[in-house]
Image 1 (cartoon, rainbow, N blue to C red):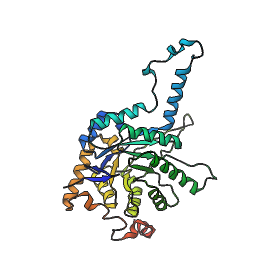
Image 2 (image 1 turned 60 degrees about the vertical axis):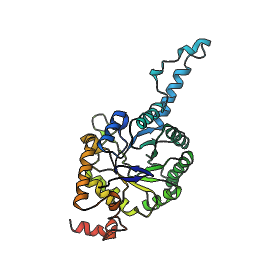
Image 3 (image 1 turned 135 degrees about the horizontal axis):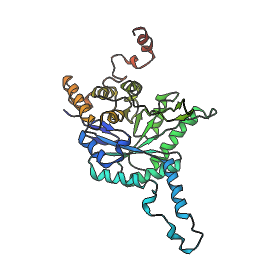
Image 4 (image 1 turned 30 degrees about the horizontal axis):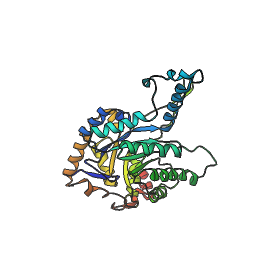
Length: 328
């Protein structure tokens, strides 16, 4: 049975990919992911705002007191007392590449065009096999049009594609007025893969302190329905590869995404909840299902239940909405 797949032009031994999370902050964990069967690992996101703060701190330390006298350079702090921007992240890429044989995909969450391109080049130079642009962008300006919002994504992609020659995927939110049209525009701009979908972590309110606080909730299998829908619709309608993320907890979940047309099934919440070795369980469940249903490879079953190949293509669209409600 062949469970290999291709994603972003990379040959993966499995469609199960460990997506960006704190689990990838150590080389030991990345080794464990490889041993457990991950086809690739997406490193945790590098945030431009974090790097900017670190640079400001570094500037403060290295200039404070330098006007006092010529020997003021001795005021410099020891190297271990501050971090020089993305150096640790880049070193993690280098160490991970040396430690494992599976692809390492760097994740970048920028906030300016200059930031996106500068750090993309750095990640490529460090040895990343591909880039995932994690565009966490929530437009709140009431006068900003949908065209302007879409252009922000396209501009980021255009500049990063010009800056590097490794494959580039973009992690999207589902909040576009026409998701299919946006996917087509990104495809025409040269994106190598779409990761569907980014989960925005809405804040909560503490009723005791009356403060807004972060509220991270792990996904449940119910969250997979939205990416499943759009992967099924987009399969073979764009050239870019499709990565499913959100709600994938079992082998059955991964199988559904592949049947809809996904090249890979990405997991975070299930690994945070059950541990890295849960990858073994998911792969075993996948293999059992494939054997029972006489599938010889992942490539054979990919897209066989997409909108293009589904027995009832309207099942992905509004035509099934009334039926779903009336047969509950």
